Structure formats: structure tokens, C-alpha cells
Image (tube, rainbow, N blue to C red; front, side):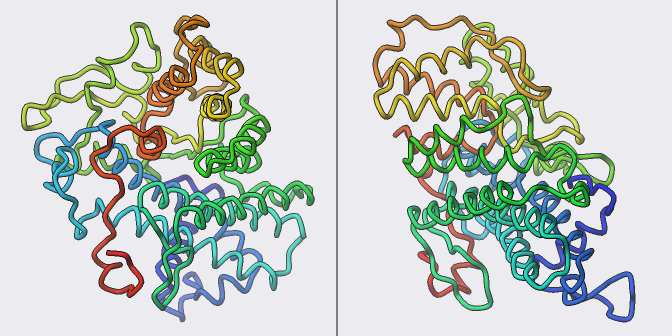
Length: 425
């Protein structure tokens, strides 16, 4: 779980309780306030805003490992749960497993916390800049949660509630994501940050850059290529925005799952990532290291490098994602020269722009190798695979580029099928 700045782990515990639909705490204990008490004070709202960031940092592990299993970024080592091995080997999805349910539950926890903050803010007594920053953080995290869901499930509810929410299709969900992100962008652009808001964004989290990066990401997914280019160009590539962790209280959720939860959760990199890489690609040792892990059914797996410790950060986005977004948008609108320039910028980078960024340090491709739309798109997909390894984007990428996948969409969790009459199960 993400380090909680000055509020400590209580903020995350409170946020998690509120995300589950309300506190069931001892009302006589002044150190364990009710939900109403928390949202009735500016300090309580600030605490939940910090907790929201931590909750997202904890929950992002589930969509990441599921996407990794589906897209062959990682495999299930021998001894893992049968549900992980089933996905690894392409067997039918089971609605009654965490493959279906964990990303769903976790991301809707983030949606609910975001909603709670947005509902409480208008009545709160606090400086306008503080309210605006918290509102922007809530809208950003709600948008990212919905984005993670719509990249995994064909249709999703836009809200959570006690009744059966309706399911929205992808165009409607993407429109809502971009509405939230653009509202957040407008808010922080029109109200300057106040000095008393410095304790709200977590260390390593750049709010403005992350909003712009997510606008670029989801504009591309929505097919708004000009919007994607414009937003990507607004991102300061010299600033990394990331989720930071500090053991023992706050562990990287991927490392915690893979290395501290026993053999049942042991998922490791597929060797094809390393073996199929272009010779000399420095991103390979950044992400993985050669090993011989028994993957079962004759499969041999490598080890993680980037996520080999429990304090490793997880980026909200990587700088070269912005270059590759622009390159893809240019290629899809037949601006091939501009696309080729950006592809080679990604390939030839040897010195990372920021600490925590991979750099390929490969030779540039010739004009003849990148002079058709198909050549460019194939190279862009390849570069995205090595640049954005385990960034929860590969499933969406493979579908968008028309490549085969084991499953087009994730299965809806059994609990949703049972409880929501609108669920398309």
C-alpha cells in the first residue's frame, strides 16, 4: 500500500472502510470516526483524499496481473492457483474467481471513494484551491478506475449504488472518462494551488501531468487522435508521476502478491519477452532477468527485475507512452513522417529522461523500414510492448491493433451476475 505521508496508515484504513459502503466502527471511540463525521470536516475530507491515492495504489495490482496473464506478459508458475494456470493456458474463464472479481471490486472501491469526496466537497469549509485540488484528484482517480475497467470488461456501470446500476457501452464510458479528466484539467488550470494543499498529493504524484497523460491515453483509445496528440504534447516528459511504496507497512502490491504470498500467487515473466527482443534492447533487463522458473506444462519462466523489491514504484504512465501515443495517432491519420520520427526517438533514447524510465538504446530504423502505415503500426505495437511492459495496457493494445488474444474480454464476476439484474452475464 502506498505510503500515507503525514496522515499515516490510518488514512488508508479509513478510506478502505468507506469504500466498502460505510464504517461499522465503534462510535464511542473518538479515534474511529463515523463516515458522517469524516466528511463533515475539512481535515477528514483531506485525509480521505490522501487515502484515495493510497487505495488506488493498492488496487492497481489486480488489473495489472490479470492483464499480464491474458496477454502472455507473465505466466503462472507451477503451484499457483488453478484459476491463474487456467488463464495462462487459455482455458475457459471462471466467473467465481479473483481473475474476474478482484479488478472489479478494487476499481469500484476507488470509484466509490471518489464519489464520496465529490459529494462532500460543496458543503466543506476550506480554501477554494484546496477544494479544487481534492476535486481534481477525485475526478482523476475515478476516471482512471473506470478506464482500467473498460480496458478489461466489454461494458461496465458508470456508478456504484445500492440498486442495480445500468451497464454503459464503451463509447459512453470513454466519454465519461474524458469528461471527468477534462473537468479536472479545467479546475486546476483556473484555480492556482494554495500552499496549504502541499500535503494532499502523495510524494511522487504529479497531478497536472497525470491528468494530461490520461487525457492522451483515453483519447487514443476513443479514436480522438488529434485530442490524443494535443494532450500528449502537454505532458512534461521530464517529470515522472508514480505510486511510491515503503515497506514494511506499504508494499508494492505486485511484489507483495508474487513474492510474499506463497507459491499459489507466484507469477513470473514469460521468457518470450526476453527471447524475442531485439538484440541490445536495454529495456529487457530493466523489466526482467533471465531465470528458469518452472511454469508447469513444460513452460519455463524468467524473474522480475523492475518489480523485484517491495518498495519499487509503479508509474501512473511512462514518458515514452506519450511519444508512442502521438506516433500511433499520426500513423492512423496518415502523417507517416511525424510518426516515424517519434518511433525512432523512442528506439534511440539511451539516457532516461527521468529516474524510473526504461530506455531502449537501439539504432534508428531507416526511412524505408517505416514508410508505410502498416510498418509503422507494427513497430509502434512492438515498442509499446517493450516500453510499457506490465503497465496494464497490453490487452487494450492487442485488441486495438487487431491482434489475436486469448479472451476478448474478462468474465463478469459471479457476484455481479447474481446481484445486478442489468449485468450482461
